[in-house]
Amino acid sequence: MRRVFLFSASIIVFSFLVQSCDSKYSKKNHISTLQVNKHLFYEIYKITSGGTLASDTYSDYLTDSVNFRKYVGTVYYDDEQNRYKLIDSNTVLVYRLNIRNNDTLEKKIYIISDLKKEGKFD
Image (cartoon, rainbow, N blue to C red):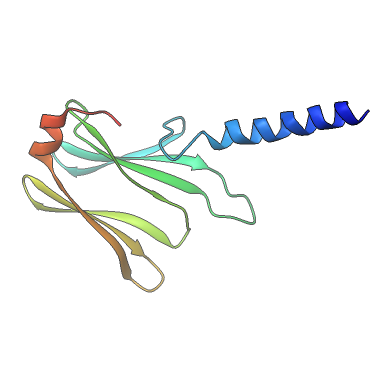
C-alpha cells in the first residue's frame, strides 16, 4: 500500500513539474497582437490563469513577423504591464509599468536592426 501511495505521489509531483515547464516562453495561448508601428508588433500570450487567488501570467514578444521574434518579458502581477514606445525608426523602449502608482519598474531598449541581423525566433 505504501508503494502505491509513493508512486501516486511521484506521479502528481512529476505532473506538476511538467505543467510548470510550460514556462514563460510558452506560445500556446495567444491573446493579442498589437502594433508598435507599421512593421513592428508585440504579441501577448497567456502563460497561466491565476484563478481567484493569483494573477494571470502573460509573456510579451516583440516581432516584425518576418525576421525576428524577441522575448521581452513576463508579467506576473495584475497591476503591471509592459509598454512599448518607439524612440525612432530603429529603436524601441520597452518598460514595465506599475499601473496603480505609475512607477516604471524596468526599462529595456531594443535596436530593430540588431534583432533583424540575429534573426532569432524566441
